[in-house]
Length: 381
Image 1 (cartoon, rainbow, N blue to C red):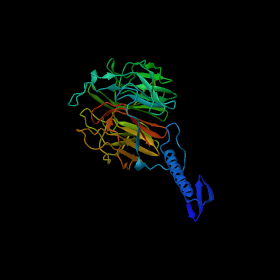
Image 2: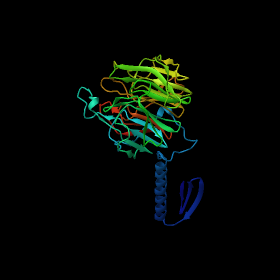
Image 3: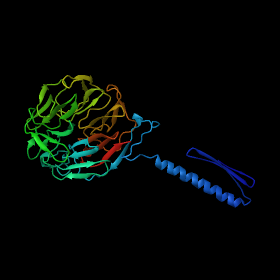
Image 4: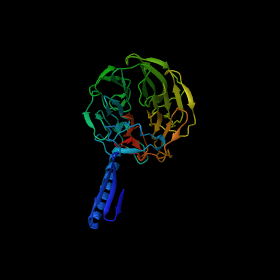
């Protein structure tokens, strides 16, 4: 606060909790004007510095402050990069391991997609490179060519201190029921050449109750879509828990664990019908339908994640054929769903990566609503 009385200038300054009262006696009014101007400029500088410091903290230095509250409905997104070091792709295996995000494999259909959106997937470029990042902006290529053949739609999960890769499709070996293992995400060893579950892609795998659980998937060569459930306590020996779960056969569905249960949402069948149902299981083998008509539209190739105490349903391929919105929904109990106020700024997509890393959701890659394969990276704020 500044007070000018006669030839005396009095002003009070409050800076970081310290209060100062200063008085200047000066006959020269112009000098007082200069002092006042300097104070105003100083105040503006302090304000700008405060605003810059209050902007989003770096990924590597999350802010721990009980005065900051997360509002689910006002979720916003920031682009970490619009063009990552790795080539555009979808159906890559992406996971968090050793405090880094990893992505590997997948396919790029940009050169083999016709104007009618017909994709010659068998001619698409498939990858077996391995990349990692600690912030989503800068990526390091850990391997140009992994020990396994180029492939897509395989699943990688951490289990018992190691990484396990299951299933997928390769233009070299076709559909796979191989199982590979790694202790560092870089060097891989095939530990099972042929698992008892049928070769497939588009499955989901969860680590739950001390076991790995494999759910659903598809084999286009055999025109078969699966709704079986398998479990393993060591990654090598597998038990079929059910050959026909009550949810219909599907692939590119999303699963995650929330409040002590496995949740399964969406997916697609061989007729290109996508689903909008929500199923839960308390033991991995028995399933209950808890929602068959949610407020969100059907979708496949989406993400299901848990962060900030909520279950999040993220992204939707809203191309011309599918219509609708690329939206984000959240639930605090798995039953009641609310839509975020703003839809994400990135184009709707499918078969992207969806990871929770350092209390933020990351979305990257995938095929978008313009039928373009992407390599952008976005994270929630």
